[in-house]
Length: 448
Ligand code: NDP
Ligand code: 2IT
Image 1 (cartoon, rainbow, N blue to C red):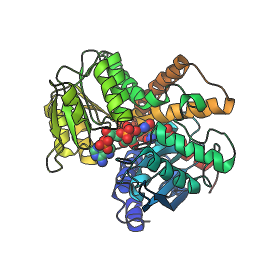
Image 2 (image 1 turned 180 degrees about the vertical axis):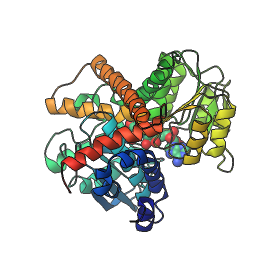
Image 3 (image 1 turned 45 degrees about the vertical axis):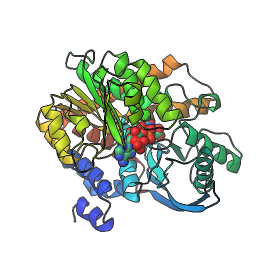
């Protein structure tokens, strides 16, 4: 029988991000397969790597000057063993089938770790919202939903945001779905508060990531207080990661976007964070402006030919919160040399596999995205629960549940890692715990 990696490399040539995500899980679960012959007999891996359904469609839209544009839309319905497909939509020019399949694949295990009834999916488009007017974004979202609405529903598939999809886009998408279906349901999460959104959903990924980091430290008798932190990105996940680090007494030194990064040795405080939120969410400007507003900060433009200097600063904790494969092997070496003791992934798959190996072998604590950033989809699950009940929980209740979920994910990772001979290895633990939950549900439900 061919090896599963050979199978997908032959079947989906060129899908390198998808292969990368699958390879990590396959390596982690080898000891599980060895002790559960029924998984191999039932071709569980072969079933997991094949999406239940892939939808690809044309998205035509017209810009403000009347010129038509054609983008490509996708939804990957990866696995529904434990609940309706659930996962974000990404609008970014780099979006391909491979990127969305890797994200959908990771989402399956992440969602299982939340302990909520959520299957895994992901979608999006190669549309670039940067530089577009609100009206152009609205027309794009309406055209995207004019096809997507056939495939989703509150009990079928519930999309949310990801890179390039925030409250504005979710609003336009929801409006079009409601118009086409003539129903007001919890078909999307990340909705605004006054029409069905959950308190703490915007904050959830970043807050959850910092709670996870705090759990890792606490289990070793330490805390975030006084720790210097490097954060990349400056979007949804980065902003609320910074907010919670400040609340827990840490110091954040950096933020970035695709054009460059800022280093503020005095630390990013609440006032500076408010500036960043307005800059990014309202004015949709570039992080470079931070250094104009706060002259002690140093801005360095991105240079794709060199290692990212953001990861060269001395610090104790690193939170990559921008995008996949943003920490390469050189960056990993710089993190180790800079004294970083812990890397906690806010983004999905931000560290290249060889980078993870270097970090883990150096003795650093490493939390993979599918565990550390699961707070976002977890509160999406809580938004679905509130929508089904047609009521809204208070902020403290949602945040308490989020904190508890992150604590439980942390414990599940450590338990699974210890049980399968990899004590303290969060990558193995997250993959194994998520995997067992999903594949047992698949076996219960027969060959479907
Ligand atoms: P946003 O669109 O709000 O922000 C993305 C940030 O990352 C921006 O600063 C952006 O810079 C930067 N970035 C994006 N793509 C690239 C790139 N190719 N190269 C360099 N920088 C880039 O997205 P989110 O904060 O929501 O998402 C960030 C990460 O977190 C992603 O990996 C996403 O999958 C993951 N995630 C998001 C969740 C959520 O709830 N939103 C939940 C769990 C994970 P620029 O503006 O210049 O493009
Ligand atoms: O990667 C992710 O977990 C997300 N983008 C959030 C998905 C969701 O459904 O809230």
